[in-house]
Amino acid sequence: QVQLVESGGGLVQAGGSLRLSCAASGRTFSKYGMGWFRQAPGKEREFVAALGWSGGSTFHANSVKGRFTISRDNAKNTLYLQMNSLKPEDTAVYYCAAKRWANSGSDYYPDGMDYWGHGTLVTVSS
Image (cartoon, rainbow, N blue to C red; front, side, top):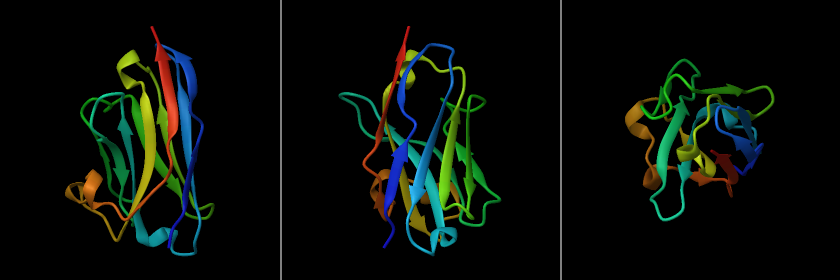
């Protein structure tokens, strides 16, 4: 069982930055591939970024590539998402998710994750 708690969301102006964190419980955090997803009002949940359980592979959606960076600290059981050059279209609830042994980009899709956090709201004003 893995419990995930996101933090770091808030209101920011376009062009600004935020850093999201996802604190995970459990001693097996290092065995899980971790991902960030987001859901804007009236839209489906979509993939943002992911990092394999081994830590060597990262994947970013085209819409955030070059602006967002995912990372993890297994010693702290924490996942991060550094978001720079934010745009109004980045406004959404951001969710952290975990999938055991996930290491390939194709492993990360909303219906395929094992555990989810409750989300943190990011609002980007124009």
